[in-house]
Length: 270
Image 1 (cartoon, rainbow, N blue to C red):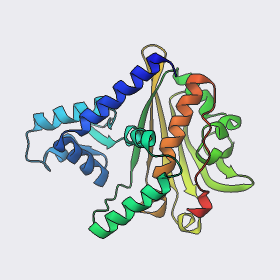
Image 2 (cartoon, rainbow, N blue to C red; image 1 turned 180 degrees about the horizontal axis):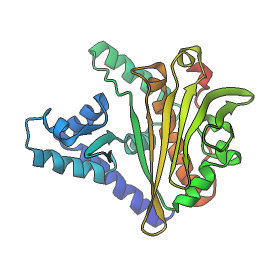
Image 3 (tube, rainbow, N blue to C red; image 1 turned 90 degrees about the horizontal axis):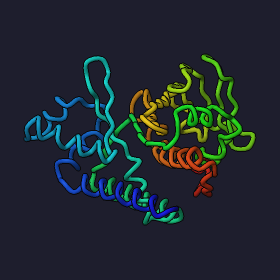
């Protein structure tokens, strides 16, 4: 990593810490974690502060990429983006320690009764490459193991209505169908997890890849995983994989080199 990359990385980390420093902004993130996709009016109604104050806090959170927003009809909805927080955690928590840290946090939440449910996941990341470059790798089955969680391979019929499978060896762990295919900006597919009997019992959910070209050689990538039908085993388990997938995809597109990671466990171990 060059000196310029270090400067950019630490500046981004400073923005995350600054955004998290204010208790009202942490409360806004908690509210979005509990129920993602809220409007400004909905968020403001939950806090004893002015609408302007909530707008200001949301602007800071968006600048730190902790919150992303999307216009749906006349409404602007806000979503929690956990990628920067995961990146901060990854800096000091080794992959070998991560499962134990997760287990300890989960136990603490169960004992204290503070577990929150957010059955809609939205991730946002910026890539220093064109939308076409991201799309080319995203839709190339040969490149899938270079960025996917667990180094999964894929087999896809690239048309609307076509089948898509993600595999570990000869075993299909995720199966789906392409719902939308609009190169180089939008890919929507169903997502039926099959790595364990628990998730296989869930109905298929939905994954949406949105890629927006920005001025210069850069684009904004937003991944939305939703339509779980409630708090399901799938909605609880996919959070661990997407931040890694997006980080590896970004590295691959920007450098042409895969970011090699050894998985901590297999999906069958859940």
